[in-house]
Image (spheres, helix red, strand yellow):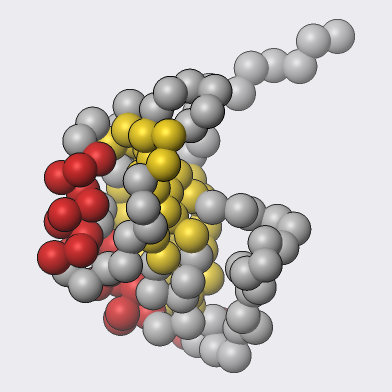
Length: 131
């Protein structure tokens, strides 16, 4: 029996260390739209649902005393989150104007497409992939 088809990635969930800082970064710097914001008193946790223009979503969670996740050297698990963009140079300039450190632009050896990485407030590697 063949598996049924997956349609798309609906959302990616991130646990953040500083909820107000990450909320500002993802909404004000990256421009994601807030769909819902809820405080869950039983968990002492915020849950923020954000949406990208294509309908995909990012969920931000805050939990008290959540352990840090190793990122460097690369650890098993989620490696990075990549966003498709049409003008990589404009994004790099924009991020740098918002005091975000951006790595040098590289070219994917297999696709010939340009990409770069930058960290979110918790050091999670985010990628911009020119499409």
